[in-house]
Each structure stands twice: as structure tokens, then as C-alpha cells.
Image (cartoon, rainbow, N blue to C red; front, side, top):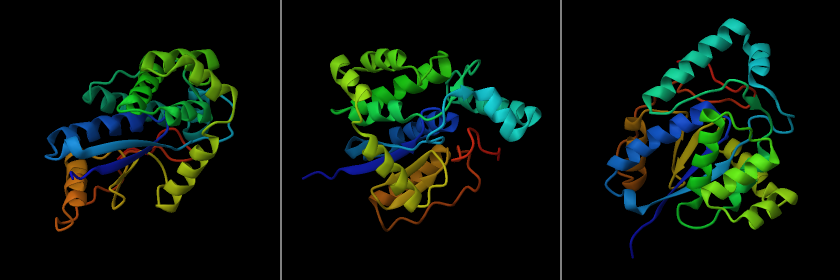
Length: 233
């Protein structure tokens, strides 16, 4: 019987480092000898639980100041471009992404969860779409392959709310202070948008417990629980 190795990925759909981190992980996975036996599981992490939607620029300028916000914005845009991602955050909003996470958690079937995550990331970061608008979420869910009636039922009820809360508590219990956060085979944790080399080392270590631990890369870019963008390296 072939072995399956789960990789759990905690992210928030408005965290710019999460999409970048996912791309870097995917580059590492493409080089991993046992990639066909890796099973990806997306977990919910809400950077701003309970927060009403508000302009990103207003929230971040209040948090960091105008000059620092511009520096952070330029840094993350440059990092995204290096991974082939286009970031357009003009008029972007931030807030509690619970509904978007509930749609992701409702996805079942090979590749469907990843397709929903990818569609929401691209819509938010590249297409100026709001993840706080019910009609927009329904459209994006359908485009990603979710059944429209099922997605409507999720958004009209409380389905997967508790699951999202459990995901967050579990991440924090594992020491995750922000996202992205990766847990490979329940054994090896990787925090932040690390390099593909670091992700590949983690995959290898988890597969073969005799492998040496990867060298840490301190202060990897991540989104913290009280801020949209983390300090630069």
C-alpha cells in the first residue's frame, strides 16, 4: 500500500505572503521525488476575526504609518512578481474572511479545495474583487467548480464555522503566530513564505525521518494576526 503524506496549509485569503508562500511551496513540491503521494489540505486562519470590512490602505496606514505602508506594499509586490503573480491592491478591503474560508472548507474532491483557494487569491490580489461581498463569493465559488446551490447553502447558514474556528485554535497551539504556516505529515512545521529550498528540505525530512533538520531562515515573510503585512526581512 502506497504511503500518503499530508501537508496542511494555514493561510488567510487576504494575506499577500500566503499566495507567495503557496507558490514557493509548489515549486518545491514539483522537485520532490514523492510529490504524487502528497495530499494538500487547506486550513483556515483569520487575520482579523470579527472585523468589519475596511480599506486596506486606511487600516495599514493606521497600523504602520504612510511611509512604512508604502515600503511594505512595494516589497510584497516585488516578491509576488518574482513568483509570477500580479498584485493590484488599489481599493482593496480587509476584514474577517470567515465566509470565504467556509467556502474553501466546503470543497470536497481531488483538487477542488486548491482550485477554490487559488481562485479567491487571484480574485482578491489581481482582479480587485471583494471577498466580503456575498454575490462575488458565489460567483468565484462557481468559477472554481463549487456547486452553486451548495455554496449558497453554505453562505446562508453556519456550515463550517466551527471547523474554521478549530483550525485557528489548532494553528495557534502549534505555535503559529501568523500565516502562511505549513505542517508536513504532522511532524515538520514551516512558518512563513520560506524559500523553495526550505520547503523541499521540510518535505524530505518529513518523508525520511533520518534526514537532518533544515537550516532555519529567520524572519521569513508572513502575515501576523494583528497586521496585513509583516515586517520585511
